[in-house]
Length: 595
Image (tube, rainbow, N blue to C red; front, side, top):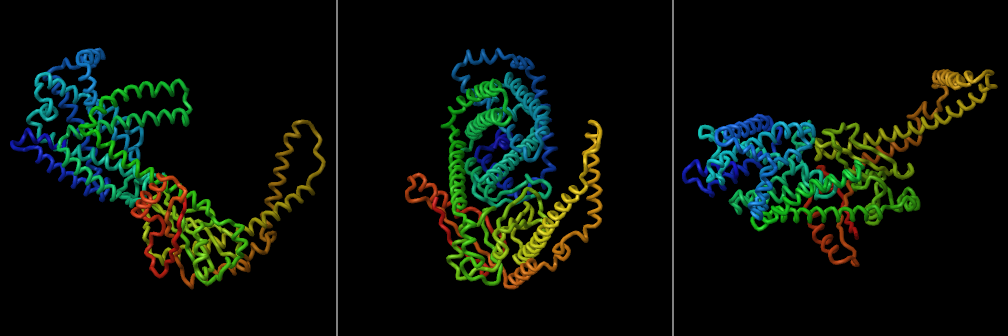
């Protein structure tokens, strides 16, 4: 709106309604191209912003020299004292407008996922700050000669011959600045999801090389609708600026508070310096906050309302998720109970592989007990699958699965962590997934047998080396301290020679179990049982969980868990299996977590 509002004084009959319509059209276009990723249009950002800052600085210098260079006296701090002494309350209210001079610059620091800290520091110090300073000094010089242009100062201070080039550059720069805020929103939501503080949403990575370049469809369209509503309702850059000012100062105060905590807890800075930091910066920010809070009725309520809504959603999701996970951990099936059930698990074991999806990386989930109680038989091989996403583009197929045995061999129960990169195909063909999982499980069984054989052989080698040392150890050589210093080196050399001679004779020294691994009867039995289970097919055992507050819980907890958190769970993205699995291969069991 600030960019297109320049047309109001340039084109006759161009009013507020036209500005709103064009702004809405630009918003729809901006949010519609987000799905293609910033990398597709990112090549335009640097030259457009370079032109934008160059034009700001150049026009500022032009106005400064042409109209009134004496505005440079404003660098004297005494003038702020005279300003407050003369205007008192109006001067304090004017501080809210001063905040708007720096709004937007903080978007650079929100893009730390895309650029390094040093790059942002250099860009802000050497380009952004001096160009903005020159632009505002030039506008101040222009106002000294044309005080009636305060409402449209930016475009009025631009020379007539440069209006249209500057208008195009300003519009493009406004869209790029909006793009930076949109990208920062995506990054913040993704990080909140990773911390378990936001409901799961679909994330699309638009680049194979840059992990930070993402697209979240739900947030994109939500932002677009909200922006269109704000533009259509407010129809004024002044009210929107008041809202932006409160959000800006709020970010400053939160940042100062968090940095103070980091100084105390992480950096362990001197207590005096850690206290001086919030006193210096916090006092200035609180003065600005007191000024912008007076604008709450004039649009400042908007960011506070949005913050309250998002805080409620994030708190509800985090609170419910933590209680659900704690309930799952407490309800894990103990190994003593598994041993009491024996290898039959207290039921009939039929050929087949059962894949039970859950979020625990350790232990046996309580949902498995529901399957044992509800099914007349259970599969001969049980694999507890936990899907984890790692911060790499693609996980090689040979490194996709990590296996661990949960019970003795005759139970045929394994824990599997399936790892996916952010560019991996999630909805892969279930047959390819099953084939890869079976091959990886077979490799795990062979490697486990090999490790056991190597462990046995190493124990025998250690015993032989101890016997060799006892035979070769004789009386210590005569001599002084120098000879004593040489003893460990000579002793190590003898051991190295003995180790070398033994390594040459290893084939004959290793146990027969290692020599003929393929003939290991226990391994052959497990492999044959695995192949028989594969021939019988895979079954996907999923849990449909419902979280409910205990009956003796207080009213607020029941309200949050039974209604708000349940609504978020029903409408967020499913966390477990994302594969194209036939419905006939799926078994679901209902679970109620009482928290």
